[in-house]
Length: 300
Length: 315
Image 1 (tube, chains in turn brown, orange):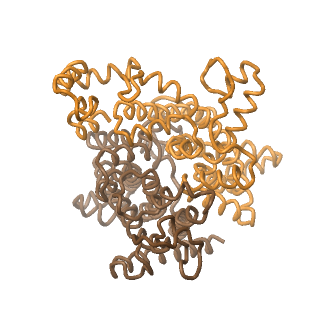
Image 2 (image 1 turned 90 degrees about the vertical axis):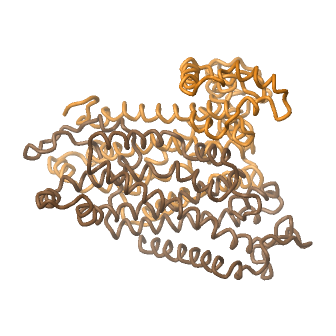
Image 3 (image 1 turned 45 degrees about the vertical axis):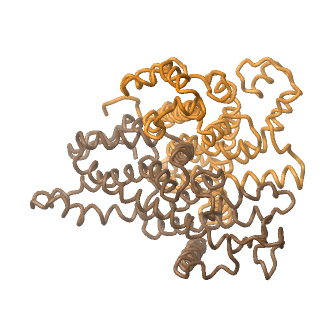
């Protein structure tokens, strides 16, 4: 069954990514109608002519969905990739060098982790004003901290291994150790987390769109489409349900794909490292010390 | 937050007084709120205000922000706590069943259910809940928190709790009746990660050595499950439940909007769209304090669950 789920995830993600790429490459060539054009055929139910029907302006909903895909996909993937890169750089620095640098980076991370995500990015996006770059920035600001925690935890674990000590003894440079020893051990867990996380970014982005914050007025976006027809909910529920359902399928696709990757790469879910603040490191597990080695082991 | 509002909003006095205000008025406002002072001094006044609970005056309604927060926050607390109860019961229950029946159809069904629920945008879930349970099958009201038509003296400000304390049964009934749909919606859309972690920790402990040892000592199956599997699995889950609070607070923005729930989520959304910075700062502060308190409670619960964990340094 987990295979069926992963396959579903892979297929969905592929379809949406390909559709978004095609839409960009052909400059809107695969939309059957213009996603902006008004027409007298308003509130048409889904049919062969209009696959998803039309909204109150007579605009074809299928075309709007296709036109919104590159925006939604692009921003979500962009946010996650940037956050992951930031996390890898900061997390590696913090985990490898420890000491004061570690303290500074981790306290900064904890500070950003304490803010509730949507509220913070709503506030930033609203103050910066509507533009694609601003909405991306507002998401990145709240998105990077878990990656730093994830990478730092992994680096700490790797740094305690004997082969890293050997590598250090052989006078390998920092970059060599990171490239040869640390990265191969870190990347699988980052990849798994990031895959599922694209879905979360998409959820938050479309929520910003639904609240009409951050996305420029003329830009098609799935959450914004939902909010523009919300008052039609009781009369024409399909207009509201279809774009929202597309978001849901995309998010589910990414999270199923992430689950599948997790199982095949055998990455353990480690909630503490991802989600917890400083507090937990004070909680110490008493366990037999390994040949006089690490005295205190942070939980997780 | 202080710095963000400073960088983004160079002249708050102008914003406050409106674009057509007389320059003298603007100067007066700037002087009253220390806006001409150097930045570190402004930061000092800011923290002084925060610590004494003085969030200032809402520039749009003219009332003190603290009194507005105190009006909205209990409503959100009511919603969030009700959702939390549902999340704890349902999340732990489903995760436990799923983990104990690993590989069966029940397991698959539960996994598909929570992954789907997690993938649902808040606005979609809330709208569908209204559409189905308030319109097609009118079981529940579509909005409000049920206070309308009841005169009651607030003790805690949490409507359901007040009604219960004063034995006001009709009010309690109305409050609960209005609470069920939004609370369930909020809970189901936020709880995804709880059964997920619960399931994976059950799978981690189920076949571990200490469980085998417990069975080998001849303990009853029920006791093994309760004391050796469930209790171990609850440690990870507690962490995640605390972090779910962050999601719940984010979720309240949408759920309160859709269900017309007069809470702090809706209040902060209105502050955001109307550039009402003083209110926004206060709301973010309250939300952040909420998240920190939730984590603190989790820290207190750990030692109760896991005797190896002690609070404090050392080890």
